[in-house]
Amino acid sequence: MKTISLEEKQARFLQSINWQLFVILLLMVACFFTWSENIIITRAIKVVGRMGVLFASYLVYKRIITFGAVDSFKWKNSFSFGLYIVYLTEGFFFVYVEYQCRL
Image 1: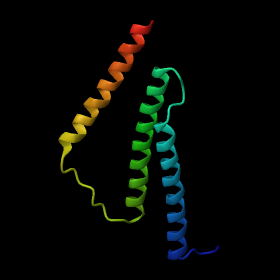
Image 2: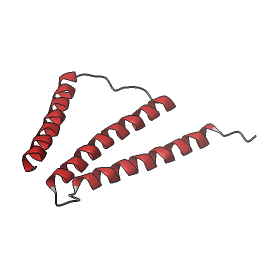
Image 3: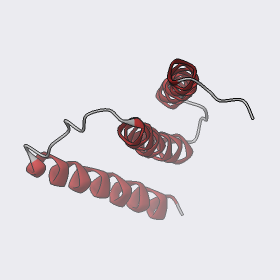
């Protein structure tokens, strides 16, 4: 059985993180542009894409922490997170209302 040195483990880890961040970047750019003429579909794609980017970024962050980096992220202003959730909920609500009005 071949043993892997610490430098090789770090190189493989950084290469995988590099690819993951590249995919996240591509998803961010793809969600920026309009894909459909229907505004409801466009908004749904943007919301799902942005939430996907947020979730994927968090998973990459946790993976880096698990690998051994220092966990320096602390909740200093949790009120802004609450307002962001309210903002997202409001967006979902308005998409739903607009969809109902078009029926």
